[in-house]
Length: 145
Image (cartoon, rainbow, N blue to C red):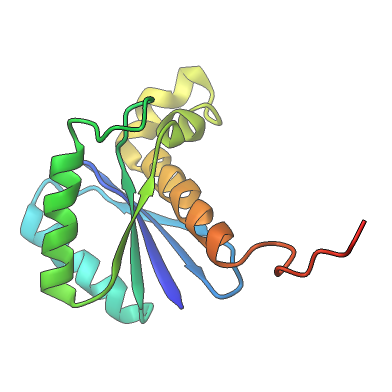
């Protein structure tokens, strides 16, 4: 399994990579305002990294209902499936952007936000959640207490 994690946004798309080792690592975000260029860059990453699964953060409200951005993510996931023929997994992304942003000094957040670093950190948290479910740390071999 070779996964690409995505934190979808209209302006920036955060990316991360993870595989059977179970560790997600950030990749440079897609920050081009030109949508066809972003699709081409995404296609190149999928091919270069031989991605088998795509994991997208799904914007849920704090009560667990789909947020207003969920329809955008649903449409994006449908387009990804059609374009690349890969499985697309939706993962609850509540508070991932907040958590990713909290690791950046407040004085640098505005400048860092435009670079996509926060988005890719959020994508890393999303993908790590997915990988933790697929590859639990104990490997399912809990010893009796």
